[in-house]
Length: 438
Image: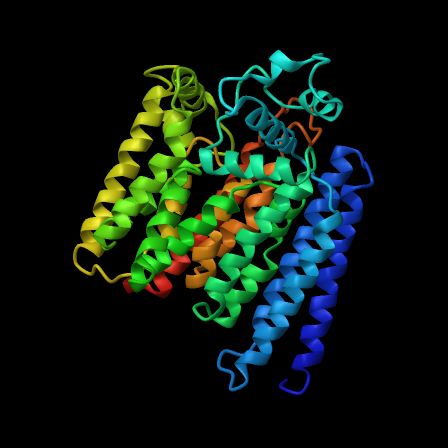
C-alpha cells in the first residue's frame, strides 16, 4: 500500500481534474438545463468519490507529512486554474453583483436603486444595459452587506462587467482560509477544503461571494481562540459582521473570550462599513431585507416541519419563523452557557452553530454551506461533510428538473427527505462516535 500510494494519489488527482474539466466544458456548452443538471450531478458525484478515496489513501500519521501537504497544495492550484474559464451554472445572481459595482461607482451607494429603473435606459454604459436586463427580481434593490458591496465596487474598477474580477477577490479569501488551515487542520481536513467540489463550483463557476464573509469570520474565530493578533481580529470581526447576518451568532460567541481591544476595533470597523450607507434610503433597504427574511422559502428542513404544524393556526409563515428563531436563540444561549462559560478556551465551533442556524432557516441555498466549510475542514465532522456532499441536491427543483406538476424552485418531498435524512443520520453517527466533543 505504501509503495502504491503515490500512484494512487496521482491517479485520483488526475481523475478529479478530468471530472472538473468536463464540468467546465459543460458549463460553456449551452446545454439544456435538465441535461446540464444530470451532467453536473454526475461530475459532482465523481469528484466527491475521488476526494473520499484520496482521503482514505492518505495515511493517518506521516513522518513526511510535508510532502503530502505539497501534493494537496499543487492539486488545489491546478483545480482552481481549471476553473478560471468556467461559466456560471444554475445561477444568475452574479448579474446583480456586477450591476451593484456600477451603481456604487456612479451614485456613491448601491442601495435604494432597483434595477428595474434602469431597464431600457440608454444613458447607462452599453455593457450594463445588457447586464441589467438579466437581473432577477429587478423590482428589488440590493440586499448584500457593505463588505460585499465594496468588493463589487473594487471589482468594477478592476474590470467593469467582468465576473472574473469578483472571482479574483474570492480567490484571495480562499487562499487566506487555506493558509490558516495549513498548520491547523489534519491532512484529511486540508484535502477536504482544497478539493471541495461545492467550493469550486459555487465560487469559481457561479461566483457566489459568501467566502468573502466566511474567510474573515473563520480567521477571526481562530485568532480569538488562540489569543493572537488583537487588532487584526477586531478588523476581521467587523468585516465579517458587515458581510452577512450569518456571522452574527459566531461573533456573539466570540465576545465571550475576545479581548476588549478586539471588541472595540470590531465595533468601529463595522460602524465604518455601515454608516456611509445609512441615509434616507436605509429604511427602504431594511424593508427589503425584512421582506426576504419574512417571505422567502427554499430547501428548508426543521422550519418546513414547524411551518406544516403551524398551518392550522395561521396561513402566514410569521409564527413558524418566530418559533424557529426562538428555538435557535435558546440553543445558542444554551451552547454559550454549557461550553464557553465553563471553558472559555474551547474553540469556536462555527460548523455546529451555523449548521444549526441553517437547519432552522427557511432558506438554505447550497452556497450557504460555504460558511461552515472552513470549520468542517478544521474539525472534520462527518455530518458537516455529509451536508457539503448533499447540498447540490437542492438544484433538483422545478426550474431545472422538468417534472410534471413541479413548480419553479419547488423541491420534491422525496429529495428533501433524502437530503436531510443523510445529514441527520450523520449527526447521530457523529454523536455516537464522539459524544464528549459535542
